[in-house]
Every structure is written in structure tokens, then in C-alpha cells.
Image (cartoon, rainbow, N blue to C red; front, side):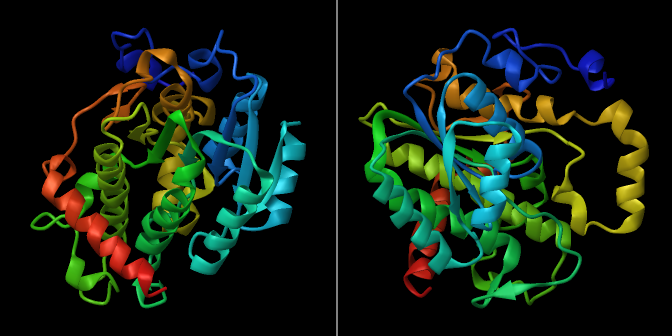
Length: 306
């Protein structure tokens, strides 16, 4: 067990940093419910897929390729079906939307789990920095395309990160530099993408007002997963050495998103940011409603060109 379980206590709901996805969903029957999950084939996504299925849910498992999604379902013996969704490719995301619509199932929840982190060198597609495109814009297209399928009390859970605090300090989102060409920094770009995830959930929650639908953002914690495959060797070595003591396990990392997606106690909670299975404070930019609305408008304008 990692030291994080000892140094961080539990919240008012009885769960905390050391809680696992199985523990936070214990006693919850998800039979008859359907969830769409991105990034289902590894790390937090694979554990989330396993636990949702364990509790009886049908999972529409999305990965970059159909094969990866199918293999994920087989590996955990999950009830569901596979769809391809390459989030950096708007055409692929739109095809995923059509595929999900074609299955005719209403969605009880959408879990935006997939992402890439800290690309050491600037990478772009469609003139947009790849982390922003993949982590935010891809999910923006996916979720907004499927809102009509969300049941009346459906939930949208968007994976953000405490790294949203690494976003550009002065403006939060560099709307005039979404290409990333001006002064690229791997962690600042990642922070901006994660801030965008957080603001997207907040803006979506605003649009859900007057309904029973909810949207929340979560920080899973610092976990040793293949999300860090792009980090430099020194940082990867440091994480490998310190991981057993200070990093969360994958089951612990998947707990917060599983809790927010399933527990009845948070069924009416919307527009919040969760960490360690409990509501948590954000940066000043993360609580900026005007910035969230500006991001929504900018996202719509960008998507219209893709």
C-alpha cells in the first residue's frame, strides 16, 4: 500500500485518496445502465471499464482503434461493445458519435477519461496543439454530439488534473496561441488542456441547469500509468522509484471518476471539481465562469472549422 493512504485522510463521505474504484462502487447496482467511456484500453480507463462492468453496467468502450477497444472488453470480460474514437481526429470522433447513436442506447453517463500528457516537443494537428486538441476539443465534439442520448439524470464526468494549475498564469487559456507555436512548454500546454477540461465541465453544468443532468470534473491523483510515456527519462525514472511509496495505484486513481459517475450521494452535484473522492478547490482560473464561457465559444468556433 502506498504512503498516500496514510498521509491523506478520508472525506465526509468516508472515502479518500486510498479508496479504490471497487470500494466506492460497493453495493451499487448498475444493471440496465449504459456508460460511454473513452480511453478504455489501459490504466484508469481499463480499471473503470472493469469496475463498471463488475457492477452490472453495459459499457460502450472507446479507444483509438476498434481492435484496442475490443481487446479491452475481452481482457476484463466486460459487458459492452467497442467503438473506435481517435480524439485527435475530428472525423473519427464524429464517426464514433454516429456509431453510438446507431446502437440505440440511451446513456446514463459519459466518462471522458482518455488523454495525452506532457509531450516533450510541440506536436500539432489541424493547426492546433495536440494536447489541447486531444484532451479537450475531441471530448468537446464527442460530448456535445451525444447530449440528446443522455438520460434525464445522466452524468458527464471529465478527467481534469491538479495540473490545471500549470496553465498560463496570466490568462489561463491562450486563445491567441492554441497552435502552441509561441513559447511551447510541455507542462504549461498540458496544464492548459487540463484547465480546458475543467472549464468545459463547468460550462456544461451551466447548460444543464433546470434539468437533472450533471457535469463534473475530477483529478484522479498522480498515478503510474502509461499516460507518462512521453515524459523525459529522468522524470520517468523518478516516478518509477517513488511510485510504490507516493503514487496512487490504478484502482485508487480510478476511484474518483467511478464515484462521481455512480454514487447516489452526488446525483445532484454539478459544476464541481473532485479530487481524492471529494470536492476540492481549483485555481482562480478554474473557478472563472467567464473564462469557461469564452472557452465554450472558442471551442465551437474551432470545431466548426474542423
